[in-house]
Structure formats: C-alpha cells, structure tokens
Amino acid sequence: MTNEAERQNTRTMTKADLVETVYEKVGLSKKESADLVELLFETLKDMLANQGKVKLSGFGNFLVREKKSRPGRNPQTGAAIEIAARRVLSFKPSQVLKATLNGESAPAEE
Amino acid sequence: MTKSELIDLISVKMPDLSKKDVAIAVNTVFDSMTEALVKQDRIEIRGFGSFRVKHRKSRDGRNPKTGEPVKVPNKRIPFFTVGKELRDKLNHGKLNGA
Image 1 (cartoon, rainbow over the protein chains, first blue to last red):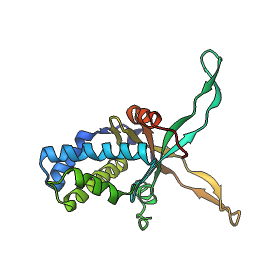
Image 2: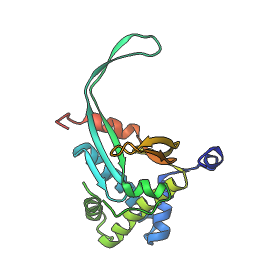
Image 3: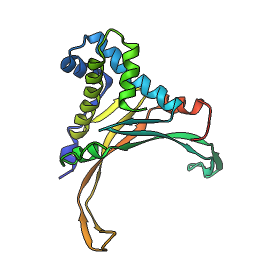
C-alpha cells in the first residue's frame, strides 16, 4: 500500500506555502502572515538555543541533546579522528501526529 | 517552551494582532504541516529543518506481557532533520548541562 506509486506525487512544502495558508485561512494581510510565520520559526530557534526544549501539543516535542565526544574514523581514508562533543536536535512526534499519519482517529491530546 | 508560550511571545512582537488571531494562525501553521505530512509531502523550512515521512513495513512482533505473537502493521513515521543554521546556532552557544 505504501509504495512507489504513492511517493511519486511527493512535493515539498515551504515557508511560502505556510504564509499563503495563514493568509487564506486566518485573514491576516500578506505582510502580517509573512511576518508571523517568520517570527514563529525564529522564536522556535531562539528557544531551542536558549532553553533546549519546545513542546507543541498535538504536533510534537523538540529536544536538544548533548553528545559527548567519541572516537571515529574518516570512512574514506580510515584515519582515526575525534568526533567533537556537540548538540543535536531530536524531534519526538506526538501520539496525535503519529495516529493522524496512519489514518487512525487521534487519541486525546497528551 | 510550550505552544501557548510561543503564542504569547509572538503576540508581544506583533502588537497589532489580537492574541486570538495569533493563536489561530499558529495552530493553522502546525495543522497545515500535519496535512502536508499526511499527504506524504516533505516540509522544508530553510534555516530550521525539514520533515519527511518514512515507512515502516509490517513485521511480526510479540505482546511483551503475554509473549503472544502479533502482527505489527505498516506504519508511517515523521522524521525531522535539523537545518544547518539551527544546528550551528545550537553549537555556538555555551555548553551548559543538558
């Protein structure tokens, strides 16, 4: 059921599409819609950098995790290198989002 | 931060809009992203990251409580990849305890 035929129609949604949707559905001006969408993602970025956690009920949670440094190898040359300590961002989809994607009725919001 | 705090922060910076409109707009954004993923579309937010749906084939599993064999059905799972700008931003701040 979930195969190539289904994937062929895949397109990519961008910020411009979100601005258009806010403009059409919410009735803000074009500029207000664009400013709001821009501000939304800027705020998410700032909060993740400063607090490391954002919970969006019904959608999912973003969590910044600290990774320790560890030994690695350059896969092309085989040379041993140190992979530096770094921060990674993980996204945990909500139960609601997972259920919706699978065509199940959404459980109550967590 | 939660969604309601996100709405508050946006409201403060867009004082010409009512908080109600900001709340509706923020919910519209996430609803619209959910709809895109339901259609199996990718979402790419430059500087933030991208979302795509991966497929998990059905497999044989077991009920961990009873040991009874069960069929785990096909599943669609959303995946997020962090964008370069955000990844750099996370790593240029101070590294304090997680």
